[in-house]
Image 1: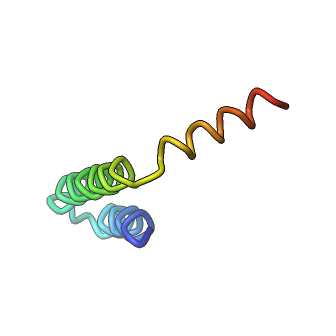
Image 2: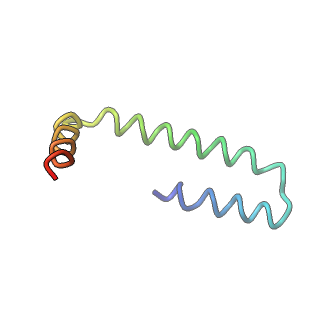
Length: 61
């Protein structure tokens, strides 16, 4: 969660301060952290049950 708040603010700061060379590195760091988050979510136990529960709720409305 911290990463998703910190990096966009750093990008905005670098745009304001005209630190153009640091901006691509921040996008790469954001992408790596996003992939790590999704990989850890993918490996959680019980994700299949949560998916079934969510779909069941969606179609029973």
